[in-house]
Length: 217
Ligand SMILES: Cc1cc2nc3c(=O)[nH]c(=O)nc-3n(C[C@H](O)[C@H](O)[C@H](O)COP(=O)(O)O)c2cc1C
Image (cartoon, rainbow, N blue to C red; front, side, top):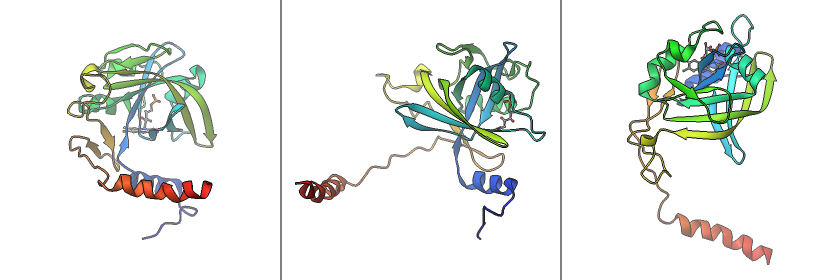
């Protein structure tokens, strides 16, 4: 089957892209409303794209009626947001936060999530999240019905049990994020495996470098 994206209506592009580009990690994005309420919304148009600068990206579309979602309104005003990673413990609460509540509803509280103030930005993070990333807006790219937000991570808070004893690497027995597949289907990272380069890789890579070095001389 072939699909010409230049001819497809947006909802069909959405279906195909989200059905096949997955699993997509879920950012439970917390922001502060103008009235001081804590807002939380799941976003699966999300990933990390760079460590220098440390950039994460969100894609936030407008609602069916063309209105901007509370998350985007809050981010435009404050230029700050926090990404809370989601595991099975937070899954049910995450879905509740995806309901379209009025801007004055404290969504984490409604979903039964405890929060604490972020360290470097004016928002709250979810205390049971395995990992919270405090972000400042680097830039917002506007399209007619969505905004793509680049956020620079300024602080990361990792739940102690999600780290190894040295505090360097993730503990994969504890940190098992969930991610979105197609429609309402999700997957949990509880079947991880190691994949190593073949032993000969170092030799092959060295061989690639040798001719270039020779030319440079
Ligand atoms: C798992 C999941 C992923 C979602 N991903 C996105 C997304 O990437 N972008 C988006 O605009 N909405 C996404 N949504 C929908 C929003 O979470 C939903 O519209 C929410 O009500 C927005 O809340 P807000 O008005 O408080 O910002 C997602 C919902 C779920 C359940």
